[in-house]
Length: 147
Image (cartoon, rainbow, N blue to C red; front, side, top):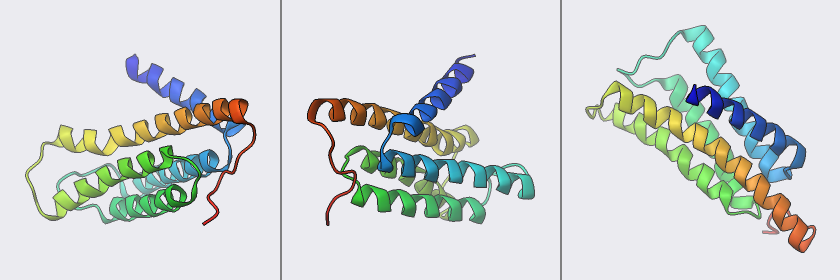
């Protein structure tokens, strides 16, 4: 029941980001949504997860997601995209541990792959709330850095 509530809250928050967020919030949300949809499509084609070997499909998807988030983090006139980008490093570290064949428990593997994505969405929602608050306090400001 708690997971359902958290999921519904995140969906409501993402709808709020689409309505009230500026360009960086929307771009990050689009990157995360595209990654999620591509993951569903990947599992529809390949089948369920297998946590014993390196999954090249997930490694590619997580790397591309990291590259997109890094692009936004380096250009946005915000701090929170750096946090979202840093959370995307967690799945990449998990892939590295699989490549190095480090021992791991399947529940720990699952937590390290799933929890960061939920936190990323939460940070985007909080970033949109901060944007709306800041806009009320100081007025319009740049979404992107000049250099």
